[in-house]
Image (cartoon, rainbow, N blue to C red; front, side, top):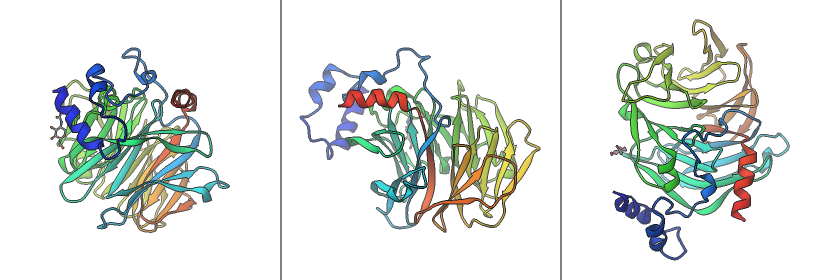
Length: 356
Ligand SMILES: *[C@@H]1O[C@H](CO)[C@@H](O)[C@H](O)[C@H]1NC(C)=O
C-alpha cells in the first residue's frame, strides 16, 4: 500500500524535483517522503491550531479562469490593503478550471482545487509562507497531487489540518486526514456525506471550529436544502446531523459563515442573502441586482468578499443584515473563488525560521 502511494508520488513530482532521487530518504522515513519539517507533525490527536476564519485578514487569494480555455487558470494574491492592492500578483498559473483554494494556516500548506475539463480534476498542494502585508510566496518549488479523479469543486482545512472537499457531480462531501496530506499521499479521500437526503451537487463549503460544515447545494435546494450545516465529525457516511438553513429553488453558489453568526450565500439570480445561523427564519437580502454571476465567498475582517465571475469584480459586504451597496475591492478578469488569509502568523513565523 505504501509503496503504491510512493510510486504515484514520484511520478507526479518528478518534473519539479531537481534533487537526488528521493528513494533512500523514503525508505528511511516512510511517513515523511517529502522531507518536511517535523515541527508540523502534531504531538497528539488533540493538537489543534487556529481557525482559518479568525484573526486579521492579510491577503485575499483569488482563483480565475476563462471558461473553456485550458491553461487559463490562475491563483492571484491580493493584499487586503488599499495602498498595497496594486501590487497584487499571480502566484500560480497554468491551471485549467480552479474553482476553489484553501489554506492550512497552521502548517503552511496551500491547496488548489482544479475542477479540470472533461472527467478529470485535481487538488494540488503547495508549501507557502507569508507575513502581515507584503509576502505570500511558495516556500519550495514542488507541488504534490493529493487528489486526482472525479471532478472536485471546493476545499477547506480545519484546525487540525484535515481537508474537507466536494465532488459536485457525485454529490459528496469528503475528507482527507492531515497526516496523509503531510505525507503527500494521493487519493486518501473518504466520503462523509453523500447524495440524498442532504447533498445535491455541492459547490462551496466552509468549516467552522473544526465542528460544522456549511455548504451550498447547486441543485434541488428546495428539497435537500440550499444552505446546510452538517457535523464535521461523523463515524459513517451520512452519520452526522444536518440542518437545512435555507431552502429555495434557485441555484446556490457561494457560502460564508461570519463572526456575527450570519451565513452569507449567493444565488444564480445575482442576489446576495444572509441567514441567521441560530434562527434560520431570519433571512436578510443584502443586495438584489448588482451582480451577474456571484460565485465564491470568504469571510475576513468583519467583511464578506464575493467574486462576480461575469464582471470579474470582487465586492465587499459588511457583516450585518442590512441591505447595502457593496464596496468594490478589486477587478480581475475571470474571478471565480476567493479565500481570505486570516492570521495564524505566529506559527508561520516558526515555520519560516525552520526553512532558512
Ligand atoms: C478517492 O476518490 C476517487 C474518486 O475520484 C476514488 O477513485 C478513490 O477510490 C477514493 N479513495 C479512497 C481511499 O476511497
